[in-house]
Image 1 (cartoon, rainbow, N blue to C red):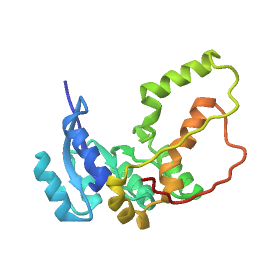
Image 2: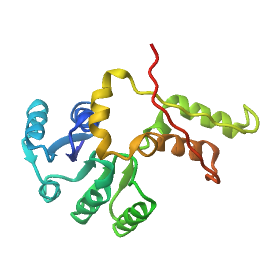
Image 3: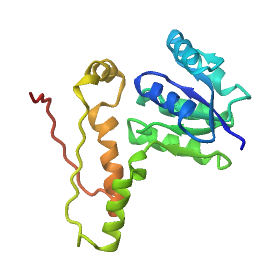
Image 4: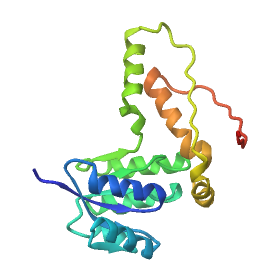
Length: 208
């Protein structure tokens, strides 16, 4: 079976996990190129995973004729630029969520994607594919749990990754944009309805 040749842009903490998955766990895929602004990091991951094409500039990766699809695992504010570079180069794209950090940038990304109907674009809302969520979706659609009046979602990262989280925070969309976006997607998908009103509270807690 022909394998899809994938290049990855960004091999930080999450990007590294994606790179390992593409290289070792995703059937029908082959990791053929890596790009990262931290070129030493890109070379380190490439050596570990047996990838020979290593780039500092994402434009060079996207210009590589051996690359058929691109996985974008960079900071949130760069997503739209990376999508444009990849799709204008004729590559299929998987992009980590969120799409962007503002509504205006999201619309810009939508326009870029719409301009390339011959290419496939996917955003990383993977929780829809988890078995437990699919069971919940089916139960809701079947009416097994009655009328839905409340959906409560929450997530918690382990303390073991706090250093990486804090290091990445200044370049990210923050907890609400980068993490709670999963909850927005799940609630819309589970209920088949759109958000009408929104408010938020926040805090930093440690339980011992």
